Length: 385
Image (tube, rainbow, N blue to C red):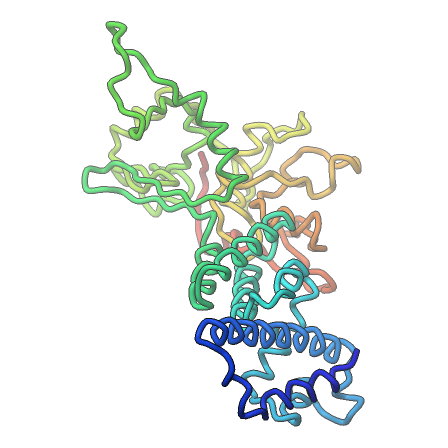
């Protein structure tokens, strides 16, 4: 490398008062573009150099507290020094950005916007798969090629808000659902619903009158799968009331609840003095419906501290793995959402059933257990359904 020679050559060019005089307008425009691309390449080199300076701890060796301070001592403004350090540290984990930028088409500001945007996505979804993360990088690179750094930032925030589901109830009492899913989840949902979305002929054999954009799904789902409603004497009810409450959509009239349970099975579960269900059986590898109901009563959803994901969106995790001889029982299972299920299997968290019969969690490298948020200590609820 001979950056000193390159520097001296560029300095000589910059000092020449007649540098641009012989150029016509078109040539001057082209040379300006090449000068900008040279600056972009120079910034990319500085990102790489700064990343290595930081990784090697050169600043400490030279008696400076931080890499950014080392750059500032060379005349770099603090904000720009911070950018060099931030991007330099990040480019090692996103080599595709560094590879794309070597031709000078990507400015330092665009590169920084990609790095900060990806950091925002990573913080929003720390369990993002490598495949999905690569998709995000490609999306941000595409945005950077055609738009501004601010647009790259907005695109990153849109990506971070993906995989969201919102439920609302209109004035007519009907439920409205809005979905924003990634490709994988969208495919799974479409696969599940497509067989149910076939056109349904009218009783006289005429074609389904509903247009394609209108919902064509006709579903029969057991209330056991969708509902955990509150009625007189059921866990969660503060006092006997004339209305029931669905887990997902809120209060309904008593006739609606009665109609719903016509084709359902109502199960009464005996609780001990710690509100832990007893005697629900332990026969199969996967949890039986009765154990699932009991887990819903005990954990009320994902039991991981602070989560609160509804029971319908959880897995029943074997505390002692089935492959290691663990049995399928209430005392060896806990409800966990997919994210926190992954924490147990891949992130070093552990869970056990405590002396109170409820799940307790231990973080990686810690010894102090954390109590599940679902444990009830101030209620008197003798019955469950």
